[in-house]
Amino acid sequence: MGQRRRLFPIPAIPKNAGRGSASLSVSFGVGALGMPLLIGALQHVLDYETVVFAVSGLAFLTGLTYLFIRFPEPKQAQGFPISKVPGLIKDPLLLLIGGFLFFQSAFEAIINNWTTTYLGVRVAANERQALMGLSIYVLGMTLMRLATGSILRKISPKIILHASLGFVLAGVLTMQLASSLAVSIFGLFVLGLGLAGGFPIMFGFVGGRFTELSGTAFSLVIVAALIGNMLINYLMGAIAQSAGVVYLTWVAAAEWVAMTLLVWAIGKRLEKMA
Image 1 (cartoon, one colour):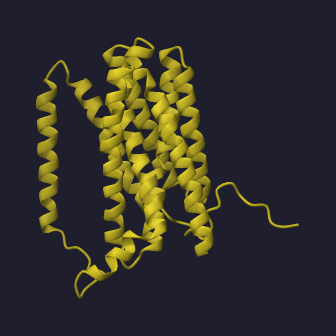
Image 2 (cartoon, one colour):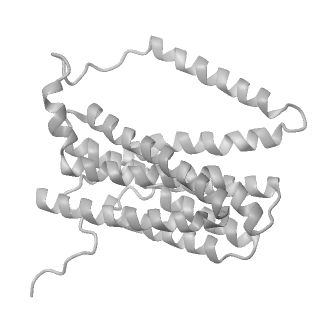
Image 3 (tube, one colour):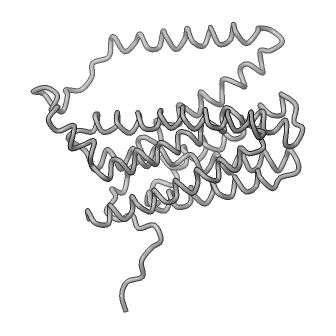
């Protein structure tokens, strides 16, 4: 009998792919979680504009420290190999990963930007409750990224990626079917768990497959992610204005379908390259 084929075959992936980027991504989660908590904690002392200005100033001062950091030598010591860029842009694997991150980034954007409004309309959450729900979502994402870089280190990236898609689907369905604030917030937490793995694991794939041009490859997939972030967030705004923000979960479900198909295609591509 032949070997049973997996639904999403992703062989020949470095065992630690995405681990470093998972740990790095935690910083984004901490910032996203800390900002609304800080604003909430200081709301009776300072207005939010002052808090945002202060945090922005701190970020600027932190950025200045890079002027004094000595970075490693570049991989391409003789200059940028521009002749190789067209081939990189046409690489099927990189295009597929860019496509996945297009939807991954868009998914994160619509949840970050529309969740508070959605909870207010769907389960009559007030502003504080809606912000708490958004914070719980970010908490789920941060905890999963911490776990991916630590206690889940021995689990292969493909298993984590498949589990992530399962968590995303469970979170979207929970939000769609929820009739109370508590259940909606639980769905957001599960959704955060699911969305945590996308960027770290895909960055691991890129770094492992395009070692000589990793900086350029990362730049290309990040551009794809930013385009998806802007376009689908704009589309969600148009849908919310014309049909209502309750369709947030439908847009999220459509993105899940696209991401799942792209994971399957990435797996098939990697199978051929193995």
